[in-house]
Image: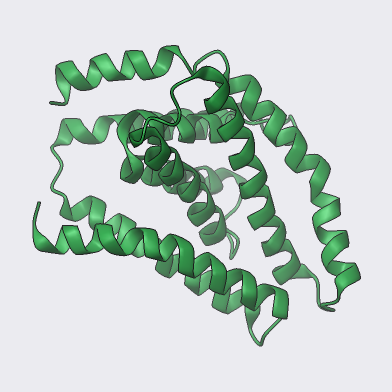
Amino acid sequence: MGRPVRVIRIVQPVILVVLPAIMLLWAWLKLPSAALVTSVCACAGLVPFFVGFEKSRRRARDLMPVVILTALAVAGRLVFAPVPAIKPIIALVVMGGLCFGREEGFMVGALAMLVSNVFFGQGPWTPWQMFSMGLVGYLAGVLGSHGWLVRRWSVAVFGAAMALLYGFILDTWTFVGFVSNANAANVLTTYATGLATNAASAIGTVAFLLPIAHSWPRIFGRIKERYLT
């Protein structure tokens, strides 16, 4: 691993803490050009992960898990489009990070949102979605590497928490993009409006994770051992 890659991997967790803090603070305070500034921050936050992934010089076969899981996540979002809030995408992103690592998890999450928005619609919300879903995959990779997501129930609880986190961040985008008067009542109304959707997303994520949380890591583990090492 070259020095630039090591530096980028040190920067990545800092970006994941600092940029969301800046975005949320700017959004809540409704500072000038909040929608533009926070979208630029989200775009900037994606750069170290894409650059680090590219600089790591992975073999073509090492990219296949990212490609396959991204395709499954996109397909799942499309197939379940008629069902409000219930999508397998967060479950698949969690599996990507858990089974293949933090950078792979981030890439699956970010690319899944970018590609699927070709069908659902691109806009200033896309960087927020990419960064937020990438964060889900990255955190799954971090916790998985420390052995904290071994049992099925722990994976399910983590998935539910990630669904709520993703929904919270996207509700913040709603507040930034569509609420002009920043006061406590509007903040509470914005997050309360999204609460039912976020809860349904968390329940759906658990439902998708429970059948695969135990078997997929073992299956992907054997694939990694046989073909990717």
